[in-house]
Structure formats: C-alpha cells, structure tokens
Length: 506
Image (spheres, rainbow, N blue to C red):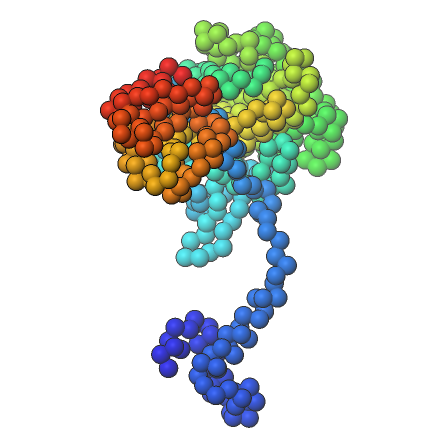
C-alpha cells in the first residue's frame, strides 16, 4: 500500500480503525480497493471542515493591516523620530516580543490586568510585552550594565478596549528613548523633553504642550492631604483621568471606588486643578501644607532646576507644570511628562481628532533594581512616542487636503516602443540597478509604449529610459521626463551619470 504512506497521521489512524472493524460495516464492504477506502476516510475527515464556509475574513479586534500608502506615511514618521534619537547619540536595541510572565508582573500597577498572557507551550509561563521600558530594565540588569542611551522601535500589546478613531489599538508600535546611569540631576530629563519638542516640531503636527509633574510632589501631596500610603498608586490612576473626565467624576471615583474620605478628596482637588510655569513651582515652595513634606520639596527643587535647563534649551514656553498629571504606571519615581496637541484656530476646517497624549515618559530609578538580586539600582529616564496616534492625525490631514502618496521610490522606468526588446531592457535595467538607481520595467515581452508611459504617470516615476531599434543602431538612449514629456538622446555610456545628475538636481 505505497499510496497509504503519504496519508496524514490522523487520517492513517482513522483508516486503520476502519480496516480493523468487523466485516459487518457496510461502507467497508462496499469499496473494492485500498485507494477507495482512503478516499472514503479522507472525505469523512474533510466534511466537518467544509461546513465551516461561513468564516468571516477580518483582522483581530484592535489590530489592523497597513496598506502600501499607509506604510509610506508610517515610514516617514518613523524616520523623523529615529533620526532625532540618533542625533542625540542613542544606540539601537531590540528585545523579544514576549517575556517571562514573572518579568512583567507587579511592574504596572492596575494596568497589569491588560497584559496578554500566553498559553504554556514549553515549560515557561510567558506574556506579550506591555511596553518597551520593562524589557529595557530587564536587559540592563541581565547584562549588568551601569549606563546606556538607547532607542527601541517595536510593537507592544495591551488587552484593552480599542478606540480606533483615537489611534488606540491592542497591538501598536512604540518608539522609546531612554538614558540609564548615574548623572547630575535633571540634565538627562531636560534632554528627553527637548527630544519630544524636536520630534513634534519636525512632524509638523501643529502647536503642542508638554505637561510636567513629579511623582515625589504627588506622593507628598497625598500624604499631607491624608491619603493612606497604601492608596497612593490607586489615587494616582484616578487623577490621571482628569484629561478625559471632569474633576467631579474623578472625585466620585476616589471616594466611591478607592475609599478616600470626601474631605481628603477635596484637599487633593485644591492642588490637582493648578497648572502653570516656574512661578507655580515657587508658589508651592511657600504652600504651608505641601512644604511640610520633605519628598515634595525634593521634587519641587528638581523641577526648578529642570526649568533652568529648559530655558537654556529654548523650550520652557512649551512646558506646563500640571499637578493633574499622574501617569498611572507604578514604576515612575520622579519627573513625569506627557505631550498633548493643541487645536489652532487656523485648523478650524479640520475635524477635531481627540487622540489624547502623543508622547509621554518620566524617571524610573528603581525599575532596574527590581531585576537585580542584590537590588543594585540604575537610575533611568525616558520617553515614548505614540506612533499610532500621530499616524491617525497625519492620515486624517492627508485625506482632508487630498494629498497623493507615492507607494514606491522608483526613479527610472526602462521602456521600449518595439517588440522583441526584452533582452535589451533586462541588460539596461541591470546596469541601472548595479549603479544603485531604483528602476523598474513591465514584466511583459512586448508591452505597448503607451501602457508603459501611463504606468509611469500613475506611479509618479520621474524618468523613463527608452530603447528601440533606432537607438540601438546609433548607440544612444532616449531619456524622457515624465512631468514635462521632454526627451533627449544620450550616449549609453553617459546614461548613469546623466540620471544621477538629474536626480540630484531634483
């Protein structure tokens, strides 16, 4: 039975079962060869699968495909971001898409419920990474590194309810920049804020504001307002919603769900509704209640120093000290920040797109130590750019203004007006590729010239090289500008130089 050796393991087992049954089974007696038996068993195995023809073809909830047009936009955004990271001296780093579950637990506070756990497939309990910060801290501790300036672009996963119109997904890309190591206070922190300003300005997203606060100020505020220390982080997560819901709703959550006394919530309300610049920092130094907290005073001193550096960097007017900023993640220990876009009157014709923050970050001095058996700490500060939210804004603006997008970077198209010139076209395009020129041709033996020219116009290809019988005899080629439709004859040996000259001038 050589043909039976090719059967799938499950089908083979089913077939043996059928063959070993007593002869009273009608369907086995009815067939006259092993091949018929195999066919009958295969049919019975496949039937249940054939009934599942109502499959809906879609991407999983909270994920999406990116078309070639969208990829062009995304790559331009990433190029601006990564170029800035490199300009500031960062090294590239990558980590696995999943980590040991123990590496991620107890690092995110209430947000830990959003981590995707994976089914145990090989003796290890794993989870998809929630962000790029915790894997970076694990990398630092595992390799016993004391300092590093790194950037990382990669996908992360969060099991939350997606809001696609706001650029919120379950699978999304993050772009992180971090500075790890012992340095003088606030210099790395100021550079991180400068980087956010450079990136948002470079992407031309319109006016923006970076809210800044400090976890030490917040914790000091909670202490003097009467919040039990065990509820500091839970209170932080409530306050962090003030950019989405009103103070009345936040207060209700703190009292009804987090168990704070109403008078404690009211004291907190006096602070978290304050925002301003360095003058607010000075004012809080004199606050009779807050000045009793050593922790809050440390945070205020660092913020005052931070503002000095931000002024030297020329970005102080972009920074707002905002006590409503809390950043829900548990690992932050000092300065925290979040960038939001501001709607300008000039953009009134655009439909408002509420995407929330487009960049955020802060200082996390204890995270690396959590992975070190001896608890050795490596101070860290970093930022994360919200690529998906920025992409949503850029994509909407391109639709509003009807901008066309080139999906390829082809510079030259090799064409012919005559039949039987495929070999000449292939030789010519090989010369262009070898010279580093981005070139294309149609995959047909005898394409029509008009079809080839229309393709160039549709794809936005700037130049066409035309070769035919006349050109071959004279040892020249025609170089055509697609936009102006002007043609010039060029000696073949001069073609590459002429193309490079034109591309450089354009």
